Length: 173
Image (cartoon, rainbow, N blue to C red):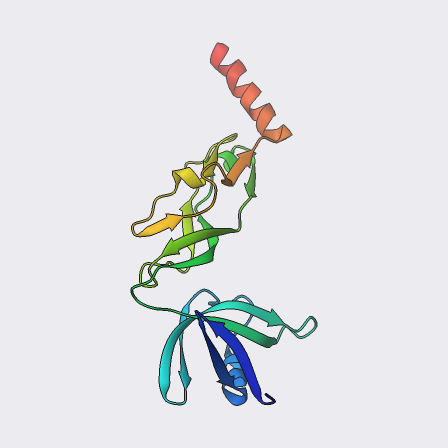
C-alpha cells in the first residue's frame, strides 16, 4: 500500500507507518548501532526488533529502506556481528602487517546475550600468528562460522623479516 513500508519480522509481516520510518531514518546513519535491539511501536503494540538490512541512498547516504526481525526473549537469533580489534599487536610493532580477514562473524545467541560487536584483543599477536574462530569463546554465544576461519593475522613484511634476521644474528654473537 502507498504510505507504508513493509518489513519481515520472524513469521509475521510488520507494517511500519510511513512517518515512523522517516523518524527512524533521521536518527540512523550507516555506521551507527545497526546491530542493536530497537523497540518499534505499531498502533500501541511494542515489538523488540533488530535491523536485518538497511539500504542507503548512493549519494546522500540517507536511509531509504529498512527490514527488521522481531525478537523473542526465549528464542535464539542468528546474526552477523562486526569484529572490533583492540590493542596494538606485538607483530605490528616488529614491522608486520595487520590483516583483518573477517569483518563480521555469524553468531547464534539469545537476544539478551547477543553482543553489539565481537571485541578481540590483539596485543599478544606476533608476526606470523593469527586468531581463528576456534580460538573465540563467549558465554551464551555460539560461533557459526567454520572453526578454521582466520579472523585476524599479522603477516610478515620485508621490514619484519629484516628485523627478525638481525635479532637472530645478534643472538648468535
